[in-house]
Image 1 (cartoon, rainbow, N blue to C red):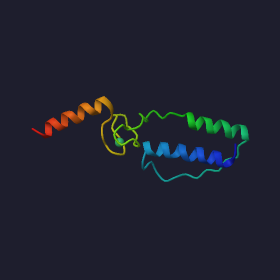
Image 2: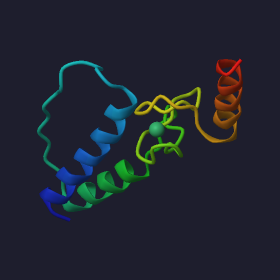
Image 3: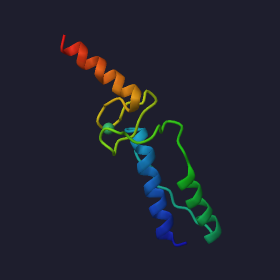
Image 4: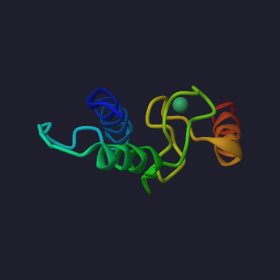
Length: 96
Ligand SMILES: [Zn+2]
């Protein structure tokens, strides 16, 4: 476990959380000193964390994350079977 491994894990974690909470405020800079054992545990904790706001990856665009209404935060499409029903209903509504 190196400082670069910890840095990479924190960057990946931050990107994942920021996608769920865009514009949460100005970024914070922190400096910490960890033993190799604590650094390894921190990396594992960051990787295994599941945010309650994260409802998975969008089936439509493949990269966006789904919010609590299962709507993609990137392409704004509703996801899955529920999203398919909404899209069909909208299409029918728009075509008459
Ligand atoms: Zn999407």
